[in-house]
Image 1 (spheres, rainbow, N blue to C red):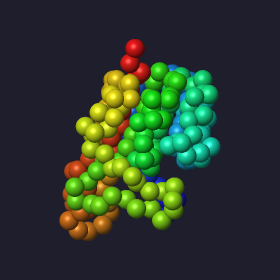
Image 2: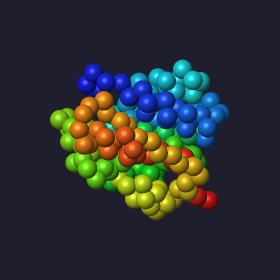
Image 3: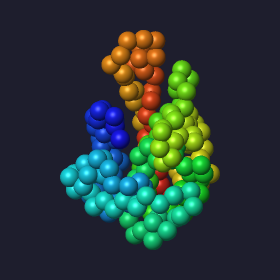
Length: 173
């Protein structure tokens, strides 16, 4: 899946943000199948349940049935045609979600597998608006870069252009 790379920086930044905004080691519903980061969360004391690979554009049963206090969604919403719908169906009152940001100097990611396509690459303000419209209030946010160890114009731009955006949001009353 990672094609001989492991996203150390992304995982480190994500874990730091998660522990800052939600240090309580509670029950978590992590959108997406079990992955290396869900295992990292478990090692840190979070009780993690993952969705089962169902199409979250069409099947909301996992989020509707879950009693988790917190839902996490790390690089998931760009793979959905209509992320608004699943965001509205989440029962939990707290959400930590991250997305890869749209980069003006790179085309959208086109994975080879059907499940690995980006239908959206958001700008931060677009993601904020999506969350707000779906009934969430952002309480904290962060961005970071993802430099490539290559030569060229785009790798230089990646050194100072944020690639990832993460938010902590709570359901509006």
